[in-house]
Image 1 (cartoon, one colour):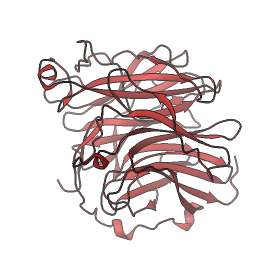
Image 2 (cartoon, rainbow, N blue to C red):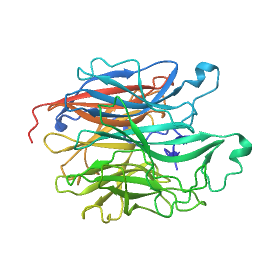
Image 3 (cartoon, rainbow, N blue to C red):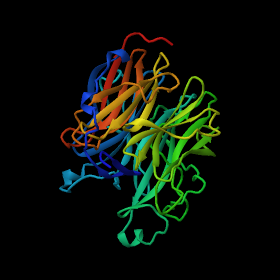
Image 4 (cartoon, helix red, strand yellow):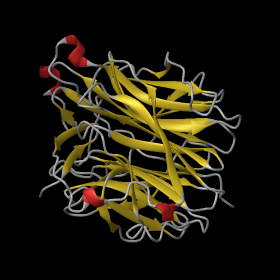
Length: 399
């Protein structure tokens, strides 16, 4: 099947560059959307480091925090390439106090995992202004040791560790944890110590109107074939403990993972999911009963992954996602308030100048009532991966 990106947690297996029919004809920013691209910016770049998988929050005082995964640029050591599994990948953050004009260039350490490299720091700012950050990790073992582990998920000599959570009560200056969430019931992947791996995901949690945290996580319920499905966990104590709620999406042929969750004004929970074995189509599932169950998943009808959904001041939703097909870059759609028009909303091309498919993973926040910052990782001409952003603006928006 042409144009497919095959993904297993933390690394790309196959990435191709087939052009999706009609891509070249997409409008960059349709005037009917009411958004205008102001500028592309570089948030953090250092040729010695492979920087990727960012998330962003805007603090109550306006300070911006961008967290990302930073690992050595292995090509600088004379190695042939870089990988999404690295024993020296750490979670770090940079700050801006002037709406993204200037960013700190000495990243602050969020966490260095004691057993391996960490991935994808996904921050959510809670009602009490604390920040919760989810991540997951890989441990590098000697070949003879890795081969002895039963039920482990391996990528070469790396073994999957599952997920963990961190919490900051002081604007991201210090972090408590790690907090280990429970394994999803039926999880078949075992970690280093023979236990089912803690729940994990790349994507946004939802801090609901009821101040409960809703988190769609991936899980694997069989060793062969090994493919993930998605499930909902709920926390009533700001992420300290979690209760299993229900399946979100599962299928005999399609793989689901990397999910961002959004709550609409009517309190529906909408899950935007990455897929595999489905020509890289976005999938969507909806809960109309507060997360007790999800309706059957739907094909959104377009390619791209993973996603982040940002509520605009006029209650529309800016959905941003990576585009790992030529022309490589970052895309978006503006959805109605209840996310009912995802299949028909115009596609916006934010960037189409990427060097290859190793880019994307966007996240977004409001800078003001009329300006949006979209952050992501990027490469030009297959150069060192860096953290970049695009600033969008609009006319006056109303509540």
